Structures are given as C-alpha cells and as structure tokens.
Image (cartoon, rainbow, N blue to C red; front, side, top):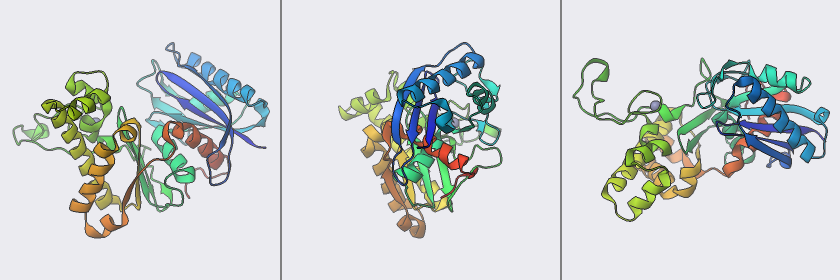
Length: 325
Ligand SMILES: [Zn+2]
C-alpha cells in the first residue's frame, strides 16, 4: 500500500504521521511521532523533522522508500510552489528557508510539499471533513489567533503572493473619528499582533482576548464572563461582534455554501463563535447569499493538520499542484 507522511511544523512542537489515504474518509494513521521544535536554527529544525518522519515510518513498520510524498503544514507566510518559508516568527532563525528542498534531500529525495497550516486544514476538511463535496467554502479557525483559507469554485484561492485567506487580519472595527491621516478613526482600538489595529484577531483571537483581560488563557475570560464579570462580558461581546462582522463580510463578498469553523475556541465555546456568526448572517447579510450559507463546526478536531497534510501530499503527488475538488 502507498504510504504518505503528514508533517506539522509548529513553534513549540513538530509532529509526523505515516498514513494510508482512504478515499472520501480520514486517512488510516499507522505511525505517529512528535518532539520539541529545536530553537537552534533551521539546520537543526530540518534534521529534527527528518528524524521525526523516520520515527513515524518506523512505528508504522514500514520503510522510508515506501513513502510517496510528505505534506508539510507550517505557519505562513510561505510559498507552496517553491516550498520556501519566508518567515516563521515563532521559530528562531527560520527566515527564507528552502524547507521542501532541504528536507527532501535529508529524506533520500522523497518529494516534500509545503503549505500554510490553514490551507492544509481546509484541504483536510474539504476531502475528509465537514466540507466534503463543497466547491465554495471558507475555512475559519478561531484559536490562539484567527486564520482561514478560501475555496472558490473548487479551487484554493492563493492570491498574488499566497497569503489569500488570512482573514484574521480582515479589518472590522472603526472608531472615532478622533485621529487624522493614516490613523483617522482608529484611535482606541486594541493592537493586533500583525502591527495593525481593527483586525478580527485583535478582538477574537485567544491570545489577544487573554492579554486584554490580563490572564494567560482565553478560557479564563469565558469563565469570568459566565460568572458575571462585567469586563469579561464586554470583551466576549466584542469578540462575538468581530466574528459576526467577519461572517457577514465573507457571505457578502465570497458567497460560500459553507463556513467551516475550527480551532480550540470554536470547539469549546461554540455559542460564542458559531451562533453569533449565524445570527449576523441571518440579520445583516444580503438575503440571496445568506440563504445559501451554512456555518458548521469543523469535523477533524485537533488532528486536522495531520489529516490535511497527508491528503495534501497525496493531491500534489498526483499532479494537482493547485488543489481543487
Ligand atoms: Zn492583524
């Protein structure tokens, strides 16, 4: 049987699975390995990735030469065609790294296909999860940050430089007008990690939500809101309003059949994520696209990156360089 490897390169941990794809379903995972991501530069990171893949293949009781291709999920920005990571902010020294080429060399020439984590997740949900069969959908993740990927007419929307789908940085807030020039109307807004203000993520991303409340985890903000804390309730209401506006923008601008919502916060707090999105679409979006759009939870949970990476490897190894369904 053909074997594919799914690989997830995260800032703190890396994980590899060796798996056999099963048509229309989740791949059958045969071996699974993970380790801490080295902080000592790209050469050590790439060596650790190769070792993690070899461990996963060993655990599957298979040999490296059985592997057809590796699909690698990494945070953007990156170039899926050349396999180059432009910058991975959470991994020291990981700037302009030819990841696919160097990892392939370390793996005796096995092709390595790189893509952004949210694109990989959308491929997973599209082929084996909540968006099976859908040709027009948006994948949204609400977690530490807010991100996404857009599939339109059965094709992944890439944009001119492969950053299309970064919907966490869709500006949704306008206050003022108290500033002037470039900052007109944006005074008083919380800063976003991207350096701008007014982004969806600055209100609804877990890290920003926790920081604004002065705690370590977003879950603490939701618990405080549940027990009636006025400031927590205000922050949760703002997060809901940000996601609601995002949902209306997606429906009006892209006319998706599905908005598939994943990520830790949407999984644990669906009433604060999916429900406000649905309500806003009903009440505020254009009627025709609103009637066609459903907001549904992602199906693949915490394994979405691994499942998506295995399926992305299979798709691209079969010659479909630009994913479509
Ligand atoms: Zn931003």
